[in-house]
Image (cartoon, one colour):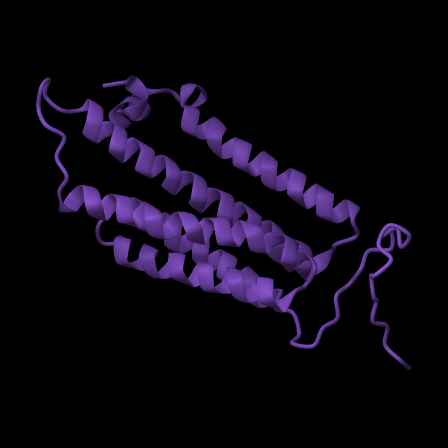
Length: 194
């Protein structure tokens, strides 16, 4: 079996040699670059907070569950006796189904992050639904595995930030001041009459 598919190897590594640490730091860096881009476009406050948290949450869930599926398949292929047939059972099915349910939810949260920065109600609804699905799956996993606690804690905190940054139903789209109106001739900006 390849060493990177063996979970017990990671427990024996010191922290600075553990690739999971660097993978986590890469997600934090990608989220920080996303937040920096939003700040440069003039996004501040609750919109910045909800968009950045949705971005990190989406990256975390999609990447971790994608890796989960790859490791489960890798263990099934490489961790068997030589010449033994590849078995497909309920355990393999359920572990792959877990990834098949959670990866799209992470991608949806990641996709909604841009709309959350623009305070779009549809993006907020999408992020809220996806976060609630991850929370429900995490609650079901808590008695079985520690990762369920991580999912519950992270999705509950993102849910709280989403509720904090909830856009109004009729809130207009905010266009940053730096938009070149010559490049977007059909852009209509709704300004309040008053």
